[in-house]
Amino acid sequence: MKNLSVHNGQGDIRLTATEFKQLSDVPAVAEWFANLDNPQTRRAYRSDVNDFCSFIGIERPEQFDDVTRAHVLAWRSQLEKRALAGATLRRKLAALASLFDYLLERNSLIGGNPVSGVKRPKIESNEGKTPALGDHQAKALLEAPPSNTVKGLRDRAILAVFLYHGLRREEVARLRVEDIQERRGIKHLRVHGKGSKIRYLPMHPAALERIHSYLEMAGHHLKESSPLFLPLRGRLTGAGLSADGIYSIVGNCAKAAGIHVEGLGVHGLRATAATNALENQADIAKVQQWLGHANISTTRLYDRRQSRPEDSPSYKVSY
Image: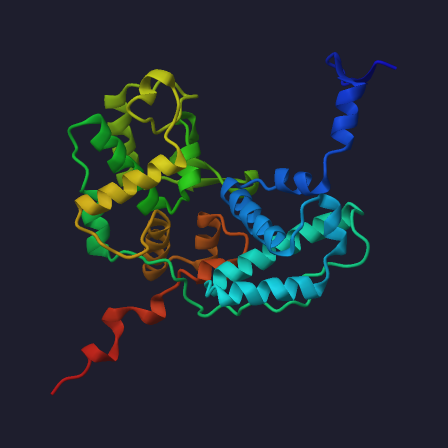
């Protein structure tokens, strides 16, 4: 038999016998990596698993069957000696646990998950460590790019999308012109989030105005399938800004605004938006949906209402 056919109602999809055999031989470990939707998660988990394999000496997929809890405990001990942050250690153990769960589901392992029962560092605080900007800093950042160039208008619009809607940088990079949609008479932003989940966010008037100003000057507002934010050279190729490109833009704008917050990054703008919304009486369950969090405990990390400096008793003391 030279080839195999699958009929799908739209013609034949044919695999050669060699291709069929190659697909049958794909290791379950490779399948697990392929099923991780988020590029950042895939990159981090791949690094974590490679770290474990290097430490244990795993060179072939079938060797995962020989891993015991003692191996995992030895790895955890080595990670602790490297003085890694608790959150990093938790992620590495979570990555390994996820891999073994998948191998067990595929019957590629005998026994149980060797990561089960291995203690992970406790979350150190109910408050997230991602820094959030104060209102005055957010305003300064929004006004940092010039308003008389295509690049300046684009960067102003990007900052507004972050600070008024709390998006992740990958979500901003995926936006297209057609994702600005009218629903029940209100302009919404269609956001393609983690796990291919779509959510619709009512657009803040300030962000909508900035986006319109940018699109009018850039000239691609009539091309609905075009990426919303284009690099200057991408205006000719049609390629959108990458997540890394957006990261650089935010960093440069922060420097221009004179904002020097350690560990700020792009995620700090998401934290700023969430913190500001909660401080202005937004319902935390609605903020959870707004941010696209699967679990409300993640949203609570942005709830800093109990630690506002301006509410400190320090300012109540009077002599």
